[in-house]
Length: 120
Image 1 (tube, rainbow, N blue to C red):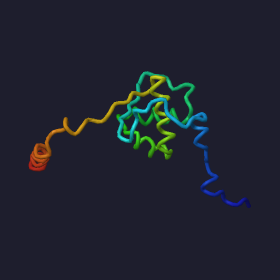
Image 2 (cartoon, helix red, strand yellow):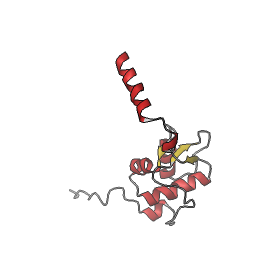
Image 3 (cartoon, rainbow, N blue to C red):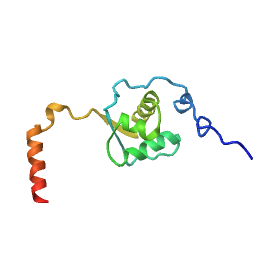
Image 4 (cartoon, helix red, strand yellow):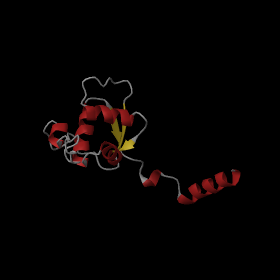
């Protein structure tokens, strides 16, 4: 009987393998709340499994960089390198989140919520 493998041994891929040995993204504009979305008509042939997974995740709608890292269970630095590569290749687009100044006032949102609750 073979002993069970430790959690560390199961499916471990070193970060430098995932990023092709790079430690820094090509874009410094990506932060935790930057939103990324897949470009739906781009083929994923030739992409690494991690990059392919990112494009699949982002096809469902915009995700933040932090959400992508969480879904992939990868470090933020590794995720930023992958996302930078995918932006450079045209597989995903990135945009900053909507600034607070452009969001509706909290009172207006509360009134909408109260109105919806009264209807149901």
